[in-house]
Image (tube, rainbow, N blue to C red; front, side, top):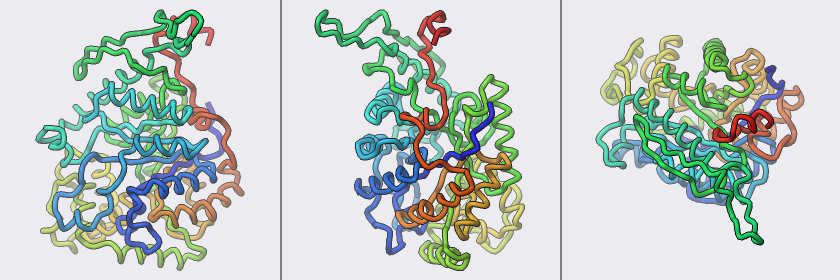
Length: 452
């Protein structure tokens, strides 16, 4: 099916902003990570601009292994995503609410229940960013010494999603009749007990909440390793990617669409949304000065700690010669394999020294970063979209609320002027606004399904 000519836009909400030094900006609330009104303001800015969704990342751990780095980062003081989004559902009306939750350290029943609750609370605006955990400091929080093998985590994730779908299908859409006169609350002929026993999980069911308004909350996934790409092709409806190169972005886009198509999925039911970090200035010089200020706020301990994590904890960056060239290969990591490969490829193409790569990671985490005027940022976005390297973008403002405000007020109108972004919401649920089909209950009899 031919895709719409308008791109999809989401925004990642992250404490002080996406840039590692963003929290030190004088205009960024230092306690924003635990200030609900701050998040509500950010969500309202995105909703007023008709963004498709807000997205909350999550790692259930302090992310750094040493006090020198931990002391200087702002990421370790923030709300749990489903809790925060449930609260935001009462302060928003249309915008989608994407929660990150790991399949490695959650149980399917708990997570199915929480996400179904979020979908009901928001009247059909929930989405689940499915992650498998990729930080070495997570396992001890759950009684384990180290993460399971990379591919084993994806095997569990695939089974986990199938279990959650089965739990969401516990009740058919019209099972709860709530008839006071007869005294019958639920039609139990439309109740289905899962009784799942698989390689990784054993879950009986049934779930004790009605089927979500969207059938299933929207499935989101990030990761372009071989296992991650296959997982996305099979299950994801929004795929978050990191790719600063247009040519590589086109290859990632085409490969993912081809895999999904081979599995019988339609192109418009799988949207590729790379991250973009826009630094907006009314002039190029103003935008460059913004970046320089952010760089001045970022201590070398923070830069090295972030680079060490995104490269997969495979080298001691504090002992290398920072002015030597980055090697073409590093030991394979059990953590973020796709990001390690992307960053190494970038370093080789650009002939980066370690110092240059560490600075680049600090600025953009490997995402597409555009520093310029509204026209210049819109040019890059439209070109990436038109050349089939993206169906839209996950916007990563380097600071909040300032850079989100500038993007909304300066870049979004330019995208609309070019006919590339909408001015209002088109549906009631997130699925409707994304043009996604509402999945039928897998337990509905085949004859009934064919008439729906």
